Length: 102
Image (cartoon, rainbow, N blue to C red; front, side, top):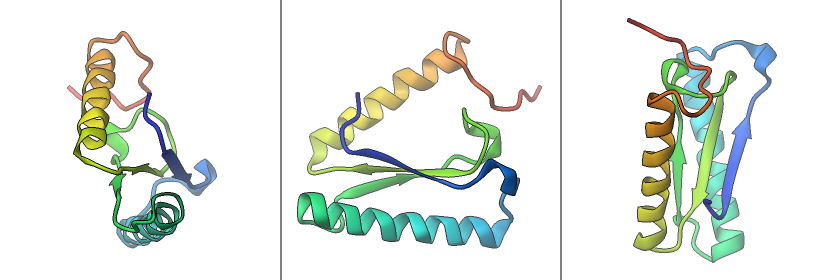
């Protein structure tokens, strides 16, 4: 439902990242996003990066989402899809591996 959507994933066996690893991972993601956006859209700044911390991610393992955007409508669509996805997870209608805190 989201075109031009990519994930930069790191091995689950690495465990959870520490602070410096999160910084490095985001830097790697931004560099990859810029290269891909330039190659596909001709604009190295036409992207959004999403990183969810351990407590808010659906899948185990650390990863970054890269979504290439070309205009405001594509960004609006991204947020609309994410809203519905997260609502489904909050209501327990979609699988969610995130830890449950009271």
